[in-house]
Image (cartoon, rainbow, N blue to C red; front, side, top):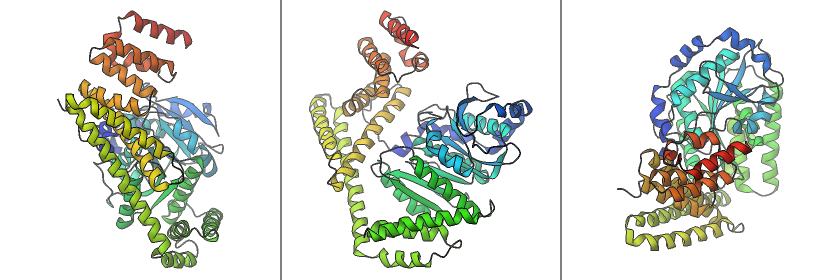
Length: 488
Protein backbone atom coordinates (compact mmCIF):
# COMPACT_ATOMS: atom_id res chain seq x y z
CA UNK A 1 0.00 0.00 0.00
CA UNK A 2 1.29 3.44 -0.88
CA UNK A 3 2.08 5.47 2.22
CA UNK A 4 2.59 8.91 0.75
CA UNK A 5 0.98 9.95 -2.49
CA UNK A 6 2.25 12.85 -4.61
CA UNK A 7 0.26 15.91 -3.63
CA UNK A 8 -0.43 19.21 -5.33
CA UNK A 9 -2.61 21.58 -3.38
CA UNK A 10 -4.28 22.90 -6.49
CA UNK A 11 -5.45 19.41 -7.38
CA UNK A 12 -6.22 17.91 -4.01
CA UNK A 13 -8.03 20.84 -2.51
CA UNK A 14 -10.58 20.70 -5.29
CA UNK A 15 -10.36 17.06 -6.27
CA UNK A 16 -14.05 16.41 -5.87
CA UNK A 17 -14.95 19.54 -7.78
CA UNK A 18 -12.72 18.65 -10.71
CA UNK A 19 -14.65 15.47 -11.47
CA UNK A 20 -18.13 16.83 -10.79
CA UNK A 21 -17.82 20.11 -12.70
CA UNK A 22 -17.91 18.36 -16.05
CA UNK A 23 -21.70 18.28 -16.29
CA UNK A 24 -22.15 21.90 -15.29
CA UNK A 25 -23.75 24.08 -17.93
CA UNK A 26 -25.70 27.28 -18.19
CA UNK A 27 -28.34 25.51 -20.28
CA UNK A 28 -29.02 23.00 -17.51
CA UNK A 29 -29.27 25.79 -14.96
CA UNK A 30 -31.70 27.71 -17.15
CA UNK A 31 -33.81 24.58 -17.48
CA UNK A 32 -33.97 24.41 -13.70
CA UNK A 33 -35.14 28.02 -13.62
CA UNK A 34 -38.14 26.99 -15.71
CA UNK A 35 -38.92 24.27 -13.18
CA UNK A 36 -38.92 26.64 -10.21
CA UNK A 37 -42.32 27.89 -9.10
CA UNK A 38 -41.23 31.39 -10.04
CA UNK A 39 -44.44 33.24 -9.19
CA UNK A 40 -44.64 31.73 -5.73
CA UNK A 41 -40.93 32.25 -5.13
CA UNK A 42 -40.93 35.89 -6.27
CA UNK A 43 -43.86 36.59 -3.98
CA UNK A 44 -41.74 35.56 -0.99
CA UNK A 45 -38.92 38.01 -1.70
CA UNK A 46 -40.45 40.60 0.60
CA UNK A 47 -39.83 38.18 3.47
CA UNK A 48 -36.08 38.77 3.18
CA UNK A 49 -34.42 41.55 5.15
CA UNK A 50 -32.64 44.40 3.38
CA UNK A 51 -29.24 45.64 4.49
CA UNK A 52 -28.47 42.56 6.58
CA UNK A 53 -27.70 38.90 6.07
CA UNK A 54 -30.52 36.38 5.79
CA UNK A 55 -28.96 33.34 7.43
CA UNK A 56 -30.54 30.65 5.27
CA UNK A 57 -32.65 30.42 2.12
CA UNK A 58 -33.80 26.93 1.13
CA UNK A 59 -33.88 26.26 -2.62
CA UNK A 60 -37.38 25.75 -4.02
CA UNK A 61 -36.67 22.67 -6.16
CA UNK A 62 -34.33 20.91 -3.70
CA UNK A 63 -34.74 21.40 0.05
CA UNK A 64 -31.29 19.90 0.69
CA UNK A 65 -29.71 22.91 -1.04
CA UNK A 66 -29.51 26.30 0.67
CA UNK A 67 -27.59 29.56 0.76
CA UNK A 68 -27.00 32.70 2.81
CA UNK A 69 -28.34 35.90 1.26
CA UNK A 70 -27.55 39.60 1.39
CA UNK A 71 -29.85 42.16 -0.22
CA UNK A 72 -28.75 45.81 -0.13
CA UNK A 73 -30.97 48.30 1.71
CA UNK A 74 -31.90 49.88 -1.62
CA UNK A 75 -33.11 46.59 -3.11
CA UNK A 76 -36.35 46.65 -5.06
CA UNK A 77 -37.64 44.01 -7.49
CA UNK A 78 -38.47 46.73 -10.02
CA UNK A 79 -34.97 46.74 -11.53
CA UNK A 80 -32.09 44.35 -12.16
CA UNK A 81 -29.19 43.94 -9.71
CA UNK A 82 -25.60 42.74 -9.96
CA UNK A 83 -24.92 39.56 -8.00
CA UNK A 84 -21.97 37.69 -6.49
CA UNK A 85 -22.15 33.90 -6.09
CA UNK A 86 -19.71 32.96 -3.32
CA UNK A 87 -18.17 29.54 -2.60
CA UNK A 88 -16.42 28.62 0.64
CA UNK A 89 -14.23 25.49 0.95
CA UNK A 90 -16.05 24.45 4.13
CA UNK A 91 -19.62 25.16 2.93
CA UNK A 92 -19.83 28.16 5.27
CA UNK A 93 -22.37 30.07 3.25
CA UNK A 94 -22.47 33.07 5.56
CA UNK A 95 -18.66 33.46 5.86
CA UNK A 96 -18.13 35.35 2.56
CA UNK A 97 -21.21 37.49 3.21
CA UNK A 98 -19.70 38.74 6.46
CA UNK A 99 -16.75 40.02 4.41
CA UNK A 100 -18.74 41.33 1.42
CA UNK A 101 -21.80 42.89 3.07
CA UNK A 102 -20.32 46.41 3.46
CA UNK A 103 -19.12 46.43 -0.14
CA UNK A 104 -22.44 45.03 -1.36
CA UNK A 105 -24.34 47.68 0.55
CA UNK A 106 -22.13 50.45 -0.81
CA UNK A 107 -22.33 49.41 -4.47
CA UNK A 108 -25.78 47.78 -4.48
CA UNK A 109 -25.04 44.09 -4.97
CA UNK A 110 -26.89 40.90 -4.11
CA UNK A 111 -24.52 38.34 -2.56
CA UNK A 112 -25.29 34.66 -1.98
CA UNK A 113 -23.09 32.04 -0.31
CA UNK A 114 -23.61 28.33 -0.89
CA UNK A 115 -24.03 26.03 2.11
CA UNK A 116 -23.41 22.97 -0.06
CA UNK A 117 -20.30 23.60 -2.14
CA UNK A 118 -17.18 22.47 -0.27
CA UNK A 119 -13.80 20.79 -0.64
CA UNK A 120 -13.54 17.06 -0.81
CA UNK A 121 -14.29 14.07 -2.98
CA UNK A 122 -17.79 13.13 -4.09
CA UNK A 123 -19.29 16.63 -3.99
CA UNK A 124 -22.06 17.01 -6.66
CA UNK A 125 -20.96 20.47 -7.75
CA UNK A 126 -22.96 20.50 -10.99
CA UNK A 127 -26.23 20.02 -9.15
CA UNK A 128 -25.26 22.47 -6.40
CA UNK A 129 -24.42 25.30 -8.79
CA UNK A 130 -27.31 24.69 -11.17
CA UNK A 131 -29.78 24.65 -8.27
CA UNK A 132 -28.31 27.80 -6.74
CA UNK A 133 -28.36 29.58 -10.09
CA UNK A 134 -31.95 28.54 -10.81
CA UNK A 135 -33.28 29.51 -7.40
CA UNK A 136 -31.69 32.97 -7.36
CA UNK A 137 -32.77 33.70 -10.92
CA UNK A 138 -36.34 32.71 -10.06
CA UNK A 139 -36.40 34.88 -6.94
CA UNK A 140 -34.48 38.00 -7.95
CA UNK A 141 -34.12 40.26 -11.02
CA UNK A 142 -30.43 39.80 -11.87
CA UNK A 143 -28.29 41.95 -14.13
CA UNK A 144 -27.00 39.48 -16.71
CA UNK A 145 -24.15 41.84 -17.60
CA UNK A 146 -22.86 41.98 -14.01
CA UNK A 147 -22.94 38.45 -12.64
CA UNK A 148 -19.85 37.53 -10.64
CA UNK A 149 -18.43 34.52 -8.83
CA UNK A 150 -16.18 34.61 -5.77
CA UNK A 151 -14.43 31.96 -3.77
CA UNK A 152 -11.81 31.25 -1.17
CA UNK A 153 -9.19 28.48 -1.44
CA UNK A 154 -10.90 25.44 -3.01
CA UNK A 155 -13.93 27.70 -3.42
CA UNK A 156 -11.84 30.01 -5.63
CA UNK A 157 -11.16 27.05 -7.91
CA UNK A 158 -14.89 26.36 -7.93
CA UNK A 159 -15.54 29.99 -8.88
CA UNK A 160 -13.16 29.75 -11.83
CA UNK A 161 -14.74 26.44 -12.90
CA UNK A 162 -18.21 27.99 -12.79
CA UNK A 163 -17.00 31.00 -14.79
CA UNK A 164 -15.58 28.71 -17.47
CA UNK A 165 -18.71 26.54 -17.57
CA UNK A 166 -21.11 29.50 -17.80
CA UNK A 167 -18.75 31.48 -20.08
CA UNK A 168 -20.37 34.72 -21.27
CA UNK A 169 -22.89 34.68 -18.41
CA UNK A 170 -20.18 35.38 -15.82
CA UNK A 171 -18.55 38.81 -15.91
CA UNK A 172 -15.73 38.39 -13.41
CA UNK A 173 -14.09 36.33 -10.70
CA UNK A 174 -13.01 37.38 -7.21
CA UNK A 175 -10.50 34.71 -6.19
CA UNK A 176 -9.22 34.66 -2.61
CA UNK A 177 -6.21 32.55 -1.70
CA UNK A 178 -6.12 30.26 -4.75
CA UNK A 179 -5.94 30.27 -8.51
CA UNK A 180 -7.35 28.31 -11.41
CA UNK A 181 -8.14 24.58 -11.12
CA UNK A 182 -5.84 22.25 -13.04
CA UNK A 183 -8.65 21.42 -15.45
CA UNK A 184 -9.18 25.07 -16.43
CA UNK A 185 -5.90 27.03 -16.73
CA UNK A 186 -5.87 30.77 -17.51
CA UNK A 187 -7.06 31.48 -21.04
CA UNK A 188 -8.37 34.29 -23.21
CA UNK A 189 -11.05 31.94 -24.52
CA UNK A 190 -13.40 33.11 -21.76
CA UNK A 191 -14.11 36.83 -21.47
CA UNK A 192 -13.45 37.54 -17.77
CA UNK A 193 -11.96 40.13 -15.48
CA UNK A 194 -10.19 38.87 -12.37
CA UNK A 195 -9.63 40.39 -8.94
CA UNK A 196 -7.41 38.15 -6.78
CA UNK A 197 -6.50 38.52 -3.12
CA UNK A 198 -3.81 36.85 -1.04
CA UNK A 199 -2.47 37.16 2.50
CA UNK A 200 1.22 37.96 2.88
CA UNK A 201 1.59 34.69 4.82
CA UNK A 202 -0.72 32.59 2.62
CA UNK A 203 0.90 29.33 1.50
CA UNK A 204 -0.64 29.93 -1.94
CA UNK A 205 1.15 33.29 -2.24
CA UNK A 206 3.55 31.99 -4.93
CA UNK A 207 0.64 30.63 -6.95
CA UNK A 208 -1.33 33.90 -6.87
CA UNK A 209 1.74 35.89 -7.96
CA UNK A 210 2.27 33.46 -10.83
CA UNK A 211 -1.39 33.64 -11.89
CA UNK A 212 -1.22 37.46 -11.97
CA UNK A 213 1.83 37.35 -14.24
CA UNK A 214 0.12 34.85 -16.54
CA UNK A 215 -3.04 36.95 -16.77
CA UNK A 216 -0.94 40.02 -17.52
CA UNK A 217 0.81 38.16 -20.34
CA UNK A 218 -2.57 37.10 -21.78
CA UNK A 219 -3.92 40.64 -21.61
CA UNK A 220 -6.67 39.67 -19.16
CA UNK A 221 -7.73 42.63 -17.01
CA UNK A 222 -6.76 41.66 -13.47
CA UNK A 223 -5.71 42.99 -10.11
CA UNK A 224 -3.90 41.19 -7.26
CA UNK A 225 -4.41 42.75 -3.83
CA UNK A 226 -2.20 41.62 -0.96
CA UNK A 227 -3.27 41.97 2.68
CA UNK A 228 -1.58 41.33 6.02
CA UNK A 229 -2.86 37.88 6.89
CA UNK A 230 -2.82 34.15 6.29
CA UNK A 231 -4.91 31.85 4.07
CA UNK A 232 -8.35 33.44 4.35
CA UNK A 233 -11.18 35.30 2.68
CA UNK A 234 -10.25 38.88 1.86
CA UNK A 235 -10.85 41.39 4.68
CA UNK A 236 -13.94 43.60 4.40
CA UNK A 237 -11.98 46.64 3.17
CA UNK A 238 -10.38 44.60 0.39
CA UNK A 239 -13.83 43.33 -0.61
CA UNK A 240 -14.83 46.99 -1.05
CA UNK A 241 -11.81 47.41 -3.33
CA UNK A 242 -12.83 44.29 -5.25
CA UNK A 243 -16.39 45.40 -6.02
CA UNK A 244 -15.25 48.95 -6.76
CA UNK A 245 -12.70 47.55 -9.24
CA UNK A 246 -15.42 45.40 -10.83
CA UNK A 247 -17.69 48.43 -11.13
CA UNK A 248 -15.02 50.46 -12.89
CA UNK A 249 -14.21 47.56 -15.24
CA UNK A 250 -17.94 47.24 -16.01
CA UNK A 251 -18.06 50.95 -16.88
CA UNK A 252 -15.01 50.57 -19.11
CA UNK A 253 -16.67 47.65 -20.92
CA UNK A 254 -20.01 49.43 -21.27
CA UNK A 255 -21.79 46.93 -19.03
CA UNK A 256 -23.13 49.69 -16.80
CA UNK A 257 -23.49 53.47 -17.19
CA UNK A 258 -20.47 55.55 -16.24
CA UNK A 259 -20.61 57.06 -12.77
CA UNK A 260 -18.12 59.94 -12.91
CA UNK A 261 -18.43 60.62 -9.17
CA UNK A 262 -17.56 57.01 -8.37
CA UNK A 263 -14.58 57.10 -10.73
CA UNK A 264 -13.39 60.39 -9.20
CA UNK A 265 -13.66 59.04 -5.66
CA UNK A 266 -11.85 55.79 -6.48
CA UNK A 267 -9.12 57.58 -8.43
CA UNK A 268 -8.57 60.12 -5.64
CA UNK A 269 -8.32 57.40 -3.00
CA UNK A 270 -5.85 55.32 -5.02
CA UNK A 271 -3.83 58.43 -5.88
CA UNK A 272 -3.62 59.41 -2.21
CA UNK A 273 -2.51 55.90 -1.26
CA UNK A 274 0.24 55.93 -3.91
CA UNK A 275 1.51 59.35 -2.86
CA UNK A 276 1.58 58.26 0.78
CA UNK A 277 3.97 55.45 -0.20
CA UNK A 278 6.07 57.94 -2.15
CA UNK A 279 6.23 60.33 0.80
CA UNK A 280 7.35 57.47 3.06
CA UNK A 281 10.14 56.54 0.60
CA UNK A 282 8.58 53.09 0.20
CA UNK A 283 9.82 52.69 -3.36
CA UNK A 284 8.49 49.21 -4.08
CA UNK A 285 5.07 49.89 -2.59
CA UNK A 286 4.86 53.16 -4.53
CA UNK A 287 5.87 51.39 -7.73
CA UNK A 288 3.14 48.76 -7.27
CA UNK A 289 0.50 51.38 -6.40
CA UNK A 290 1.44 53.66 -9.31
CA UNK A 291 1.52 50.79 -11.78
CA UNK A 292 -1.89 49.54 -10.63
CA UNK A 293 -3.43 53.02 -10.70
CA UNK A 294 -2.17 53.62 -14.23
CA UNK A 295 -3.60 50.31 -15.45
CA UNK A 296 -6.94 50.62 -13.66
CA UNK A 297 -7.77 54.17 -14.74
CA UNK A 298 -6.15 54.41 -18.16
CA UNK A 299 -8.68 55.95 -20.55
CA UNK A 300 -10.83 57.12 -17.65
CA UNK A 301 -8.53 59.65 -16.00
CA UNK A 302 -5.15 61.25 -16.67
CA UNK A 303 -2.66 58.66 -15.45
CA UNK A 304 0.41 59.99 -17.26
CA UNK A 305 2.20 61.00 -14.07
CA UNK A 306 1.86 57.53 -12.56
CA UNK A 307 2.76 55.68 -15.78
CA UNK A 308 5.95 57.73 -15.95
CA UNK A 309 6.89 57.13 -12.29
CA UNK A 310 6.17 53.40 -12.54
CA UNK A 311 8.38 53.11 -15.63
CA UNK A 312 11.16 55.05 -13.89
CA UNK A 313 11.04 52.81 -10.84
CA UNK A 314 10.65 49.50 -12.65
CA UNK A 315 14.40 48.93 -12.98
CA UNK A 316 15.44 50.80 -9.84
CA UNK A 317 17.68 49.20 -7.23
CA UNK A 318 14.91 49.29 -4.61
CA UNK A 319 12.35 47.52 -6.79
CA UNK A 320 14.85 44.94 -8.05
CA UNK A 321 15.88 44.13 -4.47
CA UNK A 322 12.25 43.79 -3.33
CA UNK A 323 11.57 41.36 -6.18
CA UNK A 324 14.71 39.39 -5.32
CA UNK A 325 13.60 39.16 -1.69
CA UNK A 326 10.19 37.92 -2.77
CA UNK A 327 11.83 35.30 -4.98
CA UNK A 328 14.11 34.17 -2.12
CA UNK A 329 11.13 33.73 0.16
CA UNK A 330 9.21 31.70 -2.43
CA UNK A 331 12.22 29.45 -3.07
CA UNK A 332 12.77 28.95 0.66
CA UNK A 333 9.12 27.99 1.12
CA UNK A 334 9.44 25.35 -1.59
CA UNK A 335 12.58 23.90 0.02
CA UNK A 336 10.92 23.70 3.44
CA UNK A 337 7.89 21.88 2.05
CA UNK A 338 10.22 19.55 0.16
CA UNK A 339 12.04 18.74 3.42
CA UNK A 340 8.75 17.98 5.18
CA UNK A 341 7.64 15.72 2.34
CA UNK A 342 10.99 13.95 2.42
CA UNK A 343 10.53 13.15 6.10
CA UNK A 344 6.95 12.04 5.50
CA UNK A 345 8.14 9.67 2.76
CA UNK A 346 10.26 7.83 5.34
CA UNK A 347 7.05 6.65 7.03
CA UNK A 348 6.92 3.98 4.32
CA UNK A 349 9.60 2.06 6.14
CA UNK A 350 8.24 0.62 9.40
CA UNK A 351 11.74 0.64 10.93
CA UNK A 352 12.33 4.26 10.01
CA UNK A 353 8.91 5.55 11.11
CA UNK A 354 10.04 6.18 14.70
CA UNK A 355 13.12 8.27 13.73
CA UNK A 356 11.09 9.99 11.01
CA UNK A 357 8.49 11.00 13.61
CA UNK A 358 11.25 12.46 15.78
CA UNK A 359 12.60 14.43 12.80
CA UNK A 360 9.08 15.59 11.92
CA UNK A 361 8.57 16.94 15.45
CA UNK A 362 11.93 18.74 15.29
CA UNK A 363 11.30 20.39 11.92
CA UNK A 364 7.73 21.36 12.88
CA UNK A 365 9.02 22.95 16.11
CA UNK A 366 11.66 24.89 14.13
CA UNK A 367 9.03 26.12 11.68
CA UNK A 368 6.78 27.27 14.51
CA UNK A 369 9.67 29.23 16.01
CA UNK A 370 10.64 30.84 12.71
CA UNK A 371 6.98 31.69 12.05
CA UNK A 372 7.14 34.09 14.99
CA UNK A 373 10.38 35.79 13.85
CA UNK A 374 8.72 39.11 13.00
CA UNK A 375 12.05 40.93 12.65
CA UNK A 376 13.18 38.56 9.90
CA UNK A 377 10.67 38.36 7.02
CA UNK A 378 13.08 36.23 4.97
CA UNK A 379 12.71 33.58 7.69
CA UNK A 380 9.16 34.24 8.92
CA UNK A 381 7.21 34.31 5.68
CA UNK A 382 8.63 31.10 4.15
CA UNK A 383 8.32 29.25 7.47
CA UNK A 384 4.74 30.33 8.09
CA UNK A 385 3.66 29.60 4.55
CA UNK A 386 5.42 26.21 4.49
CA UNK A 387 3.88 25.23 7.84
CA UNK A 388 0.37 26.04 6.63
CA UNK A 389 0.95 24.41 3.26
CA UNK A 390 2.08 21.11 4.73
CA UNK A 391 -0.70 21.08 7.33
CA UNK A 392 -3.34 21.57 4.64
CA UNK A 393 -1.62 18.98 2.47
CA UNK A 394 -1.75 16.39 5.25
CA UNK A 395 -5.36 17.15 6.13
CA UNK A 396 -6.80 17.43 2.62
CA UNK A 397 -5.02 14.36 1.30
CA UNK A 398 -6.16 12.37 4.36
CA UNK A 399 -9.80 13.20 3.62
CA UNK A 400 -9.34 11.94 0.06
CA UNK A 401 -7.51 8.83 1.27
CA UNK A 402 -10.35 8.08 3.70
CA UNK A 403 -12.85 8.39 0.86
CA UNK A 404 -10.77 5.91 -1.14
CA UNK A 405 -10.49 3.59 1.92
CA UNK A 406 -6.72 3.89 2.31
CA UNK A 407 -7.05 4.02 6.09
CA UNK A 408 -3.41 3.49 7.10
CA UNK A 409 -2.24 6.30 4.82
CA UNK A 410 -5.02 8.57 6.03
CA UNK A 411 -4.17 7.90 9.68
CA UNK A 412 -0.49 8.69 9.15
CA UNK A 413 -1.30 12.04 7.52
CA UNK A 414 -3.87 12.95 10.17
CA UNK A 415 -1.45 12.11 12.96
CA UNK A 416 1.06 14.52 11.42
CA UNK A 417 -1.67 17.18 11.08
CA UNK A 418 -2.54 16.65 14.75
CA UNK A 419 1.13 17.00 15.66
CA UNK A 420 1.32 20.31 13.81
CA UNK A 421 -1.92 21.75 15.18
CA UNK A 422 -3.12 19.80 18.22
CA UNK A 423 -6.83 19.55 18.97
CA UNK A 424 -8.11 21.06 15.73
CA UNK A 425 -11.81 20.01 15.53
CA UNK A 426 -11.66 18.92 11.89
CA UNK A 427 -8.50 16.86 12.40
CA UNK A 428 -9.90 15.22 15.54
CA UNK A 429 -13.12 14.30 13.75
CA UNK A 430 -11.30 12.84 10.75
CA UNK A 431 -9.02 10.90 13.11
CA UNK A 432 -12.13 9.43 14.74
CA UNK A 433 -13.38 8.41 11.29
CA UNK A 434 -10.04 6.90 10.30
CA UNK A 435 -9.63 4.94 13.52
CA UNK A 436 -13.22 3.70 13.31
CA UNK A 437 -12.84 2.60 9.70
CA UNK A 438 -9.58 0.83 10.62
CA UNK A 439 -11.33 -1.04 13.45
CA UNK A 440 -9.69 0.81 16.36
CA UNK A 441 -12.79 1.70 18.41
CA UNK A 442 -10.88 2.85 21.49
CA UNK A 443 -8.92 5.57 19.70
CA UNK A 444 -11.92 6.42 17.51
CA UNK A 445 -14.11 7.12 20.55
CA UNK A 446 -11.34 9.10 22.25
CA UNK A 447 -10.88 11.39 19.23
CA UNK A 448 -14.63 11.71 18.74
CA UNK A 449 -15.10 12.83 22.36
CA UNK A 450 -12.33 15.41 21.97
CA UNK A 451 -13.82 16.66 18.70
CA UNK A 452 -17.24 17.06 20.32
CA UNK A 453 -15.73 18.87 23.31
CA UNK A 454 -14.47 21.63 21.01
CA UNK A 455 -18.09 22.50 20.26
CA UNK A 456 -17.33 22.83 16.55
CA UNK A 457 -18.61 19.48 15.28
CA UNK A 458 -22.28 19.20 14.31
CA UNK A 459 -24.44 16.27 15.35
CA UNK A 460 -25.61 15.82 11.76
CA UNK A 461 -21.98 15.55 10.61
CA UNK A 462 -21.36 12.70 13.03
CA UNK A 463 -24.60 10.91 12.24
CA UNK A 464 -24.00 11.12 8.48
CA UNK A 465 -20.39 9.87 8.61
CA UNK A 466 -20.48 6.30 7.27
CA UNK A 467 -16.96 5.66 8.52
CA UNK A 468 -18.30 5.91 12.08
CA UNK A 469 -20.82 3.09 11.54
CA UNK A 470 -18.69 0.64 13.50
CA UNK A 471 -19.25 2.76 16.63
CA UNK A 472 -23.04 3.19 16.49
CA UNK A 473 -23.86 0.31 18.84
CA UNK A 474 -21.11 1.14 21.35
CA UNK A 475 -22.41 2.51 24.72
CA UNK A 476 -19.70 5.20 24.74
CA UNK A 477 -20.75 6.42 21.30
CA UNK A 478 -24.39 6.56 22.40
CA UNK A 479 -23.33 8.53 25.47
CA UNK A 480 -21.56 11.10 23.29
CA UNK A 481 -24.59 11.48 21.02
CA UNK A 482 -27.05 11.78 23.90
CA UNK A 483 -24.84 14.45 25.47
CA UNK A 484 -24.88 16.45 22.21
CA UNK A 485 -28.66 16.19 21.98
CA UNK A 486 -29.10 17.44 25.54
CA UNK A 487 -26.87 20.47 25.03
CA UNK A 488 -28.52 21.27 21.72
